[in-house]
Every structure is written in C-alpha cells, then in structure tokens.
Amino acid sequence: MKARFLTLMTVVTLTFSLAYNQNSQADVTGIWLGKVQVTEQLKMRFGYVISRDPSGELKSTLNILEQKAFDIPMEKTLFTGDSLLIDLSSKLIRYAGTYDKDKDCFTGYYTQAGKSFALDLVRVNELPRGVERPQTPQRPFPYTEEEVSFVNPAGGHLLSGTLTSPVQASGAPAVILVAGSGKNDRNGTAMGHFLLLSDFLTRNGFVVLRSDKRGVGKSTGNYAEATTEDFASDVSAALNFLKIRKEVDPKKIGLVGHSEGSLIAPMVASAGGDVAFIVLLGAVGMKGDELLLSQIRAMSVAAGKAPEVIDSIVNLNRNYYRIVSQNVSKEEKAGSIKKVNPGISDKELAQLVKPWIGYYVTTDPSVYLQKVNCPVLAASGSRDLQCVADENLPLIEKALKAGGNKNVKIYKASELNHLLQTSTSGSPLEYDQIPEIISPSLMDYLLNWLKAQVN
Image: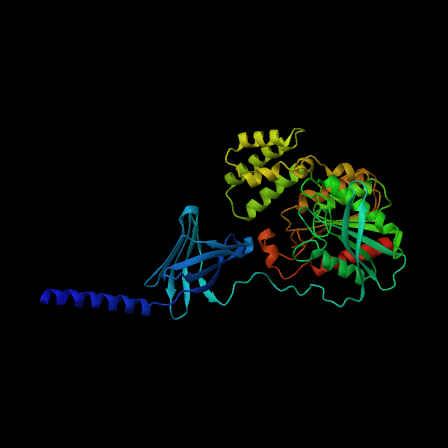
C-alpha cells in the first residue's frame, strides 16, 4: 500500500513539474522578423511564423521576403528552455537561436547548405509584403485617359492598352512605351514603372500609349510562343494606330523601350515607319547569349558566389544557349540539354526550349542599331547587373555611329539599377524593397532630351 502511494505521488509530482515548466516558458508563437547580411551590400529579410497545432506541438513557416518565398513549411520546431530550433533538414536549412525574455527577441544563426549567417529575430505584428511608393500616380489626373485597342494584322490578335493625352491635345508629340522581357502588363512591372512614366510624360505635354503584351491582361495572342521579333511586330502595330489619332502629330512619334524593349525599339525604327526618336533604358547592346551570360556572372558576384561556382554556372548556361540556338525541334533541344545536365528540372527545361530564348540568344542589336537614323538616347544605371552599362553602352554607341547616326546621346546614371532606381547593390533582390519607382533625376534627364527632339 505504501509503495502504491509513493508511485502515485511521484506521478503527481512529475505532472506538476511539467505543467510548471510549460507555463513558465515564454510563449514564442507569433511572427518573428530579422535580416541576413548576404553580402557586404545586400540584406534579405527572413520571417518566421510560429504557431501550435491542436495537440500543442509547435509548427512554423519560413518567409524570405526579397525572394517572394512565402509560407515555406518547416519540418521541426523545438523550444526548450531559452533555445529555439527550426529545422528543414531535407533542404539543409536550419535556424538556431537563444531567447532573451527581457527584450523579447532571439539571437542566432540561419544555416543553409553549410553556410551560416547571423540572424536576430524580433516579434512583429505582421510580415511586410512590400513598401510604400510615394511616386505612385494618384487619381484624379490632370489629363485624359482612354482605354484603347488595336489589331496587329500580322497575327490577327487584339492588343489593349491605355492612351493618356494632355487635355484637348491636337497634333502633340507621342511616346509608345515598350516593355522588357516577361509577362508585363501595360503598367510595365508590379511597381508601376510604365504607369509612372506615362503620368510624368503626359503631364509634360506628351501623348503616351502603354499596352498589355500579347497574351497578357486584356490583349489576346499567344505569349508563350512569341519571340522578340513578334513583340516588335506588336509595337509596329501600335505605331500605326497612333499615326491616325487626332491627338498626335504623326511625325513626332517615338519609342521608349526598357531592357528587351531597348532591343525592340531599334528593330522597329530600323524597319522604317517614321519613328521620330528612340530611347533605350537599361539598354541592350550585346548579342543575346553574351548578355544573358553577363547577367548571370554579375548577379552571381553580387550574391557572393565563389569564382569557381560562377564559372561552372556560366559554362553550363553557355552550353544551353548553344543548344537552343540550333534550328531543330523542341524535343531534340530537350534531349541535348538533358545530356548536358541530367538533373535539370522540368520547369527549367520547358523555359529553355521556348521559341523566345532560341531567337534571343542569336540576336545581335548592332544589326538594327546600324540602320537607325533617328535621334537616340541610351541610358543605363551604373549598378545595372542585368544589362551592365560599361559592357552595353559602348557597343550601342559604336553601332549607331558606324551607321552614320550623328544624333546619339549615351548616359550612364550614377547608382541606378536595372529598373532605374537609386540602389545600394543593384541586385534584383532589392527591386521590391526600394521606395523609389524611378529616379526623379533620370526622369528629368529623359524629359529634357525628349523636349529637345520634338521642339
């Protein structure tokens, strides 16, 4: 009887002890946010959301804000004493931190694939999903907006966009905004670069047309099978549409292209069609395959990758581009790529065999630039990692002058990235986190040049 009594008392004591420890331990459920210094100039924000399931077990998700990677489930979350462990062992990802109850924060390290980075976490009410952008145009606008559409007779598809005009405009100079690569709508990017440019130029006397790319937004057509040449055909259709608008002087229509749009603009201008001027922003001067390899190298350096790793990545992609440039079927290209890299993902393989990249890697902008006779402004940021200014601007200038063009302005804008924002590193991971949409000084420079051409 005594033994049974002692056993019962032991169980009660243990239960009381466990309850006491659990109740006295800090509640770490909630949202935790911190920054990882990836390179000397680049920081990335990491957010953990910790909760308990119905059984009381801790669960958590990882959010890497600059990469737009949200709600990644972790495999293990343990909090013992003041030590927190959050583990995704299948991906070699781990966070280990020590809790400071007075400051309600964690001090610790984030580890991925053997590399460790200091990561201190503080409690927040919510994860930031973006930044405020004071430059975003706000209605009502002091000009007219019109939803327009026009047909590209070459493909028979309908292109939709927005035409903005100064009030009671008649015979005004006009600009067609030409987007870069990707499924861009009429506003250009998620941050509204083309919305801002359209607003800025219209307020300053220009009619502006911005359109959804084929197969995007309200435009019809097949985006997935389109090449740069096809997008140039769409811009030519936009040019013909503007020529018959009463608001527009048909002899004063120009093209402002960004990134791939800066390749499309000279393609259209070199084919005739009365283009009065072209502006190349984030300008492309290199042959397609060389440009893509330059991007890979520049962004890998900015991400802090080792030189031998960068060389390996560049060489692998050089082989890809050699294969996709061949005039063979998608199936043959896919087979050759798999021989080069048997472990390539289905998603990456599907992107590589699309018509766009096969056309792009073989395209040399100089072929078109040498045939451009209208005034040209080529402007790039000194921190552009996607179209490196020191590699592309000299080639653009050389090609234009080789063709006899004497009205050429080359401008390298200090501290601007590929999206023409004032930046620290130039890394694409910064794009979404910079409040500035486009540098005001760059926009002023652009406006002054445009006014000089049309006046």
